[in-house]
Image 1 (spheres, one colour):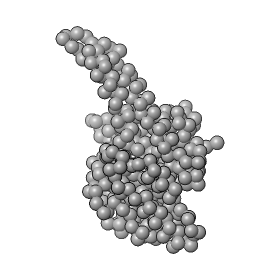
Image 2: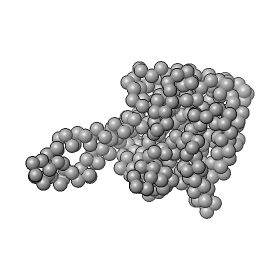
Image 3: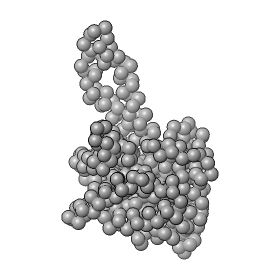
Image 4: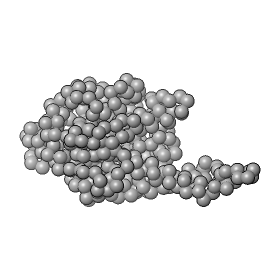
Length: 344
């Protein structure tokens, strides 16, 4: 199917909210990892989200070019062509963008989508993330409000982060401390600044103990009830019925989370869960296995010529694609509830 239109993306998110499941949002850095993500969603018979971080976009442009916008556009254009061959809906998203990279990443990409929309086309990306976790909340929400005006006009959904995700991802690091928990006041200030959808749709990456990086299950102290508290105070402020979930929530830093904690978060309005660490390993592990098993073929041992079939990149990237796709299919299964993750 073609990359999701704004209407299809909105329907995807609405369906997830109504049926208490979440889409895996898979970080990619190359055409190979993007192909693996598409394959994984197709094998799971699931719609999904593919996303590109600032570092991933820079890498995708080539280590000599190192231009975030160039890499992001290249991956997005590639996805728009290749995704048509798969029977699932895919939305494109840009991941964590801190303040110092907004002018070199998100704002130019929104401008590209605006130009497309002005010509009667769909936006290049369906959503973008502004990561204001490193600045005071007032400044975070002021910038978010400015960006929401731009994204709404360009038919794009904005994602924001309210709170701090601990650990490190793509060069952005935060300490693991009490700031990992979004307060009820933070939720209220967010809806005061950005509205409840009337100014444009946005996703909220609220924090409840999330940590980026590699952690074994049980080592991360998650408190999913923080999400419920936030939904409840905002629902009351807006005069909505008890149990309403006014925010579309995003789960960052899921490595090390227990499955029951993930499922509890889904019941509180989480509709998108970022996955990067696990899929990086799933992609790399088959490559390592190939090299160990074929060391005499990939190295010219004792002056021999090696084995071209063993060092042809296709021989190990094929296995890497399969490994990452299998992990994504597993993630889709873990994030399911009673609802279907694919339209139709």
